[in-house]
Image (cartoon, rainbow, N blue to C red):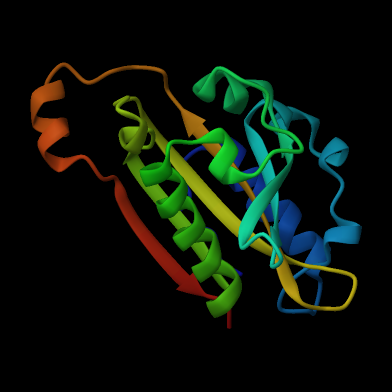
Length: 169
């Protein structure tokens, strides 16, 4: 899979590791994915699994920088417990699309706009297979420069970052 559109090195590294794990397969297995093999990404990585009985996503891994964005621990908590309802709904829709369409999610721009913060950054979400070979995991990295653009008012009007879903061939 070509990840040439990824700008930031942490996202490029996750894409390279994901490709390495999948080998000749379309999507790698979660069992093969070890965050400790990419230690430089630990502060910005996140990993969720869809829980059909709850119709929600359970956070399994959230790096320190990711937890700082919510101001609370995220591991072993559902998306609806971590985020306000409107943000949780968008996250559930995005993650659901990743697993349903077996696609890659990519966004850049104001990555925390839904939370009312206008830091510039880049995000990628990648699917992973469970032990039964079903796509039910999403792993990703959110990189944020931490800088707020000078013209925040214009960003508030735009609110959403540029985002795309790419089907996995």
